[in-house]
Image (cartoon, rainbow, N blue to C red):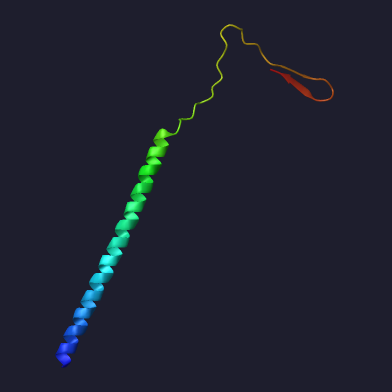
Length: 81
């Protein structure tokens, strides 16, 4: 009787361990799938979003560039670009 009980408890322990392993593996696969979908969505949205355009000041070739005028009128400094 002792050997049958020991065998049944060992089999139940092994079965419980296998069920826990399958449950943990399925949760891991589900989490990996969710992360993969989020990464693909992020990559697609980054590819579809417009690229930023750098704002640069271009010199107008039709007008000669003049120096800014700076003077103080007594109430504050005036800078005329």
